[in-house]
Image 1 (spheres, rainbow, N blue to C red):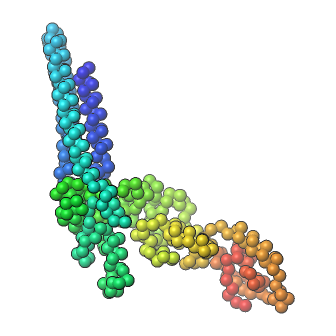
Image 2: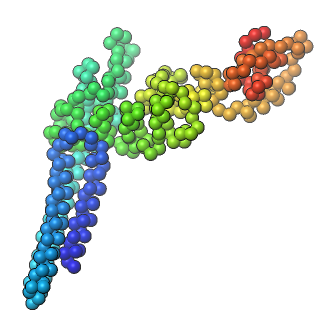
Image 3: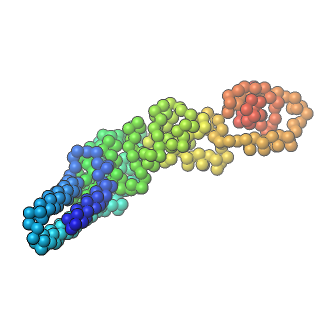
Amino acid sequence: MGFLRGFDRVTKYTFQSFRMFSKYVPTCRSSRYCCPLLEVIIVSLKTLYVMEEIKSFESQQMMSTFQHSGSRDDETKSTILHSQQLNEFLVKEQSDNMKILEMLDKGCMKYGCPHYRRRCRIRAPCCNEVFDCRHCHNDAKNNINVNQKLRHDMPRHEVRQVICSLCGTEQEVRQFCINCGVCMGRYFCETCKLFDDDTSKKQYHCDGCGICRIGGRENFFHCYKCGCCYSNFLKNSHPCVEGAMHHDCPVCFEFLFESRYNVTVLPCGHTIHEKCLKEMREHCQYACPLCSKSVCDMSKVWEKFDMEIAATPMPEPYQNKMVWILCNDCGKTTQVQYHVVAQKCLNCKSYNTRQTRG
């Protein structure tokens, strides 16, 4: 029974070890692992080896029990000795694992820039200069003070060299520093060359988009017609528009596909930053900047328009004046009675219209 208890302890310890390092291992996509991760693997193999030794020793002791039934005292002494050796091994290996964990986490969340928390800097392949991240590069190289002919963005997938923030060693792109062994980013994507210690963002790489997204893979889906990722809430309700996010935000003109800010889909299918849409509403703008369709349910507003028009009769010369209007919501052209407040579409009852002919 002593051996079985020892076996259980080793099994429990093995799972604990894997849990300790699971936040590093899943994001490693490169085959070029360096010494810290190899040490973890070696520790796990050592533990498995001890487990096999326990099984073998237990089997031998059982055989010995049948052959020498009078040697109970010797068996008890051997069990106690083996249990002590096992405990010493577990304490030593746990201490070694803690040292490796401390080395991997050294400087975590203490380095980086306003865009990312990371323990490395990158060398831009386009201009050979060193920056904290590609956003820092783009902000510097697209500044209004830079000659327009020299402005450019960093091609993220072409980054080849990184510099460890702790020891300053320049090396090929990898998750662990080849010199000091520190983990340069808890989240690491070899495709996008992305490092980030703040894993609360729930980063994931989307093969459809070809870049990394945030928010958790389980919360988003990739629409291949729109060419981008949307929230699962929009899976069966969003109108598909080809290349919906492959353009600039109609308000702030930032390229939406690579934007770090949340993007929402309007009922018309066009996309816009959530913060920009909020600013529009604060300034009483409720129409899409691209197609002029209403961005929300305006039925309550149209009822107020009805009451306002009813309370504001037109002067006699204009009471029978007819005009042609185009509805921005349904696209129908109709002839209606002119009113200075607004013209109502006869088809969808919307006041989101424009006069086309007098």
